[in-house]
Image 1 (cartoon, rainbow, N blue to C red):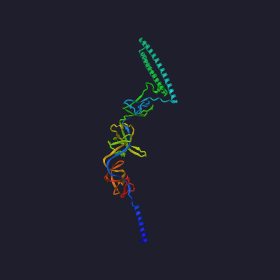
Image 2: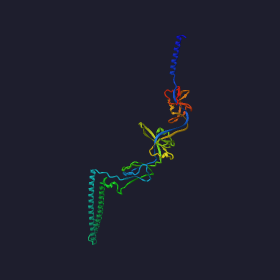
Image 3: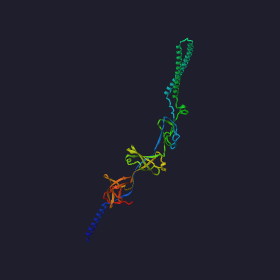
Image 4: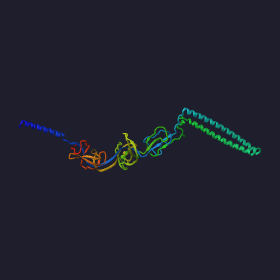
Length: 403
């Protein structure tokens, strides 16, 4: 073999090696993917939401009249009997008088005293006139028996006596009226520094507020002594053994919930326990979320069946987390949610067939946070790609990652 021939062979081999290396470098490699099998198993779909516990019947006792509320001796958690006095209201202390009002009142008192003096003088005058008329009647009667005066004059004397008696009665009533007016003016002068204004008198009226039912004091709304208006809330009373739960669901989720649906209560500080949907309120309410978005929510009330030790540890207005079951089956064909993605208006997955990814349209039913029920398009035992990246396309070679 000549030297030129060997040179051509070496050059050809070098070219072939470069082409082979270039071909290997450009040859598409298999995409590593995570996979999961399609299998049958139980599926439970829930509507999850935070809520709170509350006593079914909370009695808010209010002040039946305006006055001075005495300091309460009760504390939150105390037991009360039906009819037990839980609050006492005394009359309010009269307010201070400003200078002008005090001077006006002093003038009114002096005028009332003068009116009493005038009425007493008129009473004395009426009494004297009556005595004189009675003496005149006696003289007229004596003269009438001797027929010195006519019968008409005797009748006139009697009429004069009756008139003077009426005048005396009117004068006595006027004196009584003026004295009461004076007492009224003097009473208006009573200030907050007067001992009688403190309500220490035994005749001072008090208003007692009694518990309508037996239970526990939930909250003392007005604990210290203070002046309250009529209708001011004073005490909350309820039975802590009569608890229920209330959650505010989005209206789009509330329509999926049925009365009697089972639920699980958790996230309250103890082990989870069961509950049951008792009722769904027919009217919704508007709430503003933390992001400032208006939401329509519906109150769902849940009953706590049976007596449990966990239930006894719950109180009024405690935070709970509730999972309400809206769908449950013991045998469903399950696909992980991480394998599903939208393909137009349909759901799709990538399956693995002979080492290549294959796009498959599927029909899914109810789903929870981890799995969805497969209605059509997949069979048990097939493997699907989880969280496919943009490198995974129909027909692309794939390889499963080793866990």
